[in-house]
Image 1 (cartoon, rainbow, N blue to C red):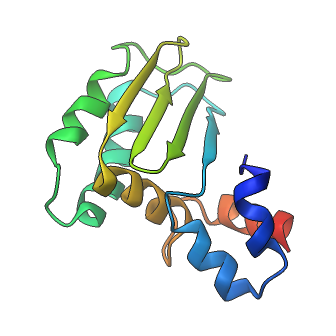
Image 2 (spheres, rainbow, N blue to C red):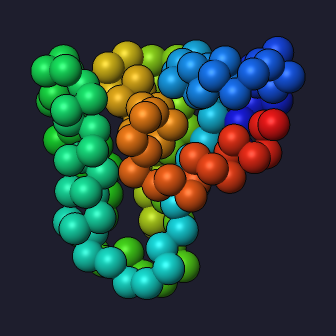
Length: 135
């Protein structure tokens, strides 16, 4: 989900402008991840953290551990949903049991945007579907 007011101005522009805007955490968006099979929480969250850490350029790395602690210790069952809402320097995170936590960090928010919308997205199919929806 992309905030329509935030994205409307760039939606009509060239693909390069849209791609650049997707990297901007000031454009509010929610990334929704649905588990298609049972996944151990440690495995899933570790994969996300491994994608974020190098994108944070050594800044606010303590936020990685904070993010990890926002998750229950159990496995993510098939059909479980997590949501990450990026709003400027803030990430609002809803874990698989519906608990909501907040992380305030510009480097973390930018890393989330880059991980999902940068040159090497962790989910190329997500990136493609967002670009298709915006073009």
